[in-house]
Length: 168
Image 1 (cartoon, one colour):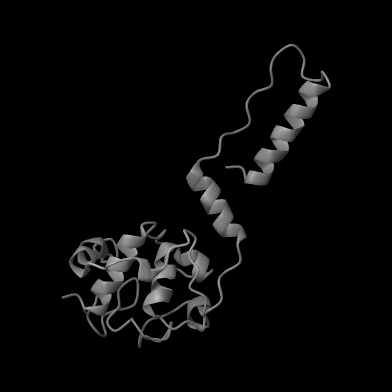
Image 2 (cartoon, rainbow, N blue to C red):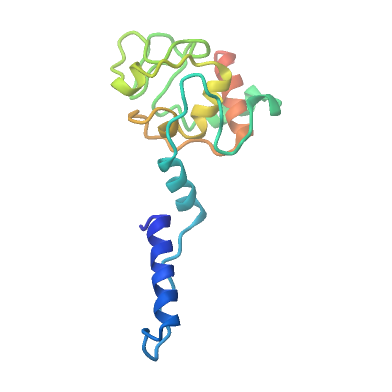
C-alpha cells in the first residue's frame, strides 16, 4: 500500500515524463488507486494524538449532537463483548468496563495495561469515550486494543449510553 505522498510523487513524475515526451509511444500506467479508507487511515496515522483533555473527533461530530439509545448501544456493544464485559473485577483480553465512565485510564485492578494507556492521563468522560471509540489507536497510540473503532457517531453515542447504564 502506498502513502498519499508516494501516489502524488508517482503522478507528478508521470505527468512530467509525458510532458517531456519521455514516456515512449505507450501511455503511462495510471497511478495506484487509493481507497477512501486508506486515505483516512493515512491521515489519522500522520495526525498527532489528541491531548488527554481534547475531545475533537476525526469526523467533527460531538456527543451532544446525538440522542443516545442504550438498547441499541447494547447491540453495538456485542462487537466489544469478545474482549470486554461489564462485570466488575472480570477482565478478559481487555479490562472490565464496569464503571468506565468517569474512571481514569489504566486503573482497573488486575489488568495489565500498556504504558501508553496507563500513562495517558485520560479520564473516561462520555466525550472522551466518544472520541476514543472513533479510533482508539489515534487517541492512545500504542494501545494494545486492536479494535479499529466505530465510525458512526450514533453508534458511539449509543454504546456510551449502554456503558453508563451498566448494561441494563
